[in-house]
Length: 507
Image 1 (cartoon, rainbow, N blue to C red):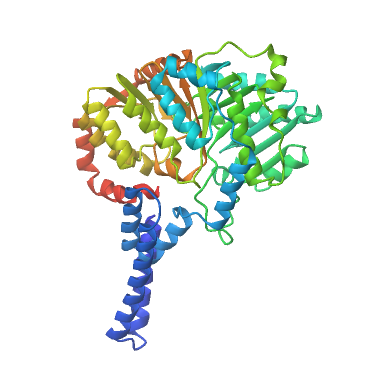
Image 2: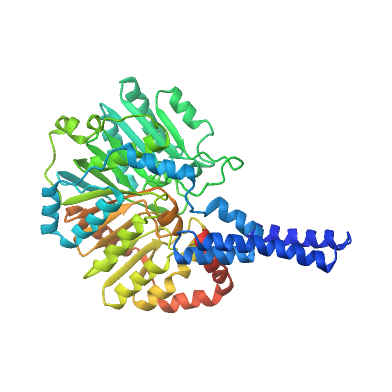
């Protein structure tokens, strides 16, 4: 970002030197300024007419005003949310990839009876994200990737029909090596193995020809949105999901990627605190549908998939039938192409409907007005609102921006804890012993508005209590930040925080 400012100022200095040494008059200078102002005005109007959130637009308008030319270029590359023709086509493919799968009426009725508040959030997800609510599913919560990884290996070895992988990061190392070994064995057994990873998420990690090598090994692999800066300026929409499906009846999701720091085999930013959930049963259909919709819409447009060949019902007998229901769950996805901020709406609904408490975990805290107001209002009304964030940063400026956002929250009574042993990567809300959501959606602009994301709404399940107990145990080894402490930081970081506040939606 500082380089942008430097190049802009350098460009102005070079232009001024050239002008005044080649006979340019004040009149020429005003003509040049008029052109620059015209470009700025065009982009300001362009941003105003966009359908982005208000504070997101305001921040970008200010940025473009300060850096008229480079700011506009940066906006086009990384923040323009205007739907292009290509994206409209892609959105249509998502809608047509699989027909909507409605919830069972008896499941909806049971949820309404057992958890009326959860039923309302569930209705929103079905109406706006084509997400069905399920029973007949067991839910196992893992508070660390270290604990989830051996179970992932066990379930992969048990695969007989198909394996679906969709991860933001798949990096070489112990974790991937063990998974890769299993995938190669399963390909030889005739198992259909499909894998998607994000290109930007793997910059500097995986080789450029990683997907090609996997395809030669029999693994059907695709890289999501390959980065070609000179061919495609729309680089802001990334696939940030974490989904693993085995034979339609077993699924993993949550915060962990496929890289050694997520299972604490290497230490990058202290102890890595992340989580994962294992689903077995009918609810896995929701994860399978998310994967297949993305696969068809992005890579295999002409595939007329027969979902009956991938749903849990086809192979559930192989693991003894559907398990006894452990409450209700609803896997859901969030797309950047439809202007419906599903992940944020779920968070806002939980905050607005809570009666006792909301416990939240996020690695990054870059809040818009809606989320900030919802948190402060809930705390001001006397609810127990707690927030867990990293104590050791993975990105220094984002860490400072996270701390900058503490002020209004602390003043309203929100309790904020920094995880002293290291980095918190989990994205989790738990409320009133009845509702929780866990997935990939950070509390920042990019995750809420620009990425493909996923989450799982969990209601009236033992897993909700397990998530609550994990949160409470984690804050015992964390540092609670006070308002006085934050005010001390603000005095020392006044200038840096002022710049970061301006740049918040850009990061």
